[in-house]
Length: 167
Ligand SMILES: [Ca+2]
Ligand SMILES: [Ca+2]
Image (cartoon, rainbow, N blue to C red):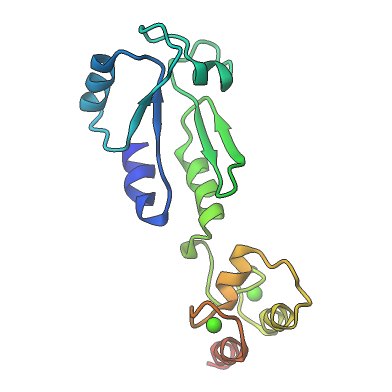
């Protein structure tokens, strides 16, 4: 969590919060020190003080056959839960995060329909966005169509996509 998620994504407006189900500050301090954690760790009100229970723990409880591994959740920009797991799966977490932040490494600028090729279909998709024929373009489509990354999708981007095709 520290290295794979927090170190990699903190500059992508991703916030990592730990929530430990104890109100015992020394337990939290030990955990932070032992694991070299730099993201914020909150404690769970309602815990009796040992590592058990707590208001948030109870609200988000997911059975996991007694595994000591904690639960991981990803909440999107709208406050909607997009991921919940009671086993560690950083690959899956990275996939979800990349989808949410529209990580450019997941696609090619100009490949608006995300089929791995830049061709006339992408020009058509971009024209559709400009003309409003695609009234709800996805974050990925908006990113891929904005070839010059100026925040607008317009004829300049079409020219750049066509240039890429003709190159
Ligand atoms: Ca394409
Ligand atoms: Ca543009």
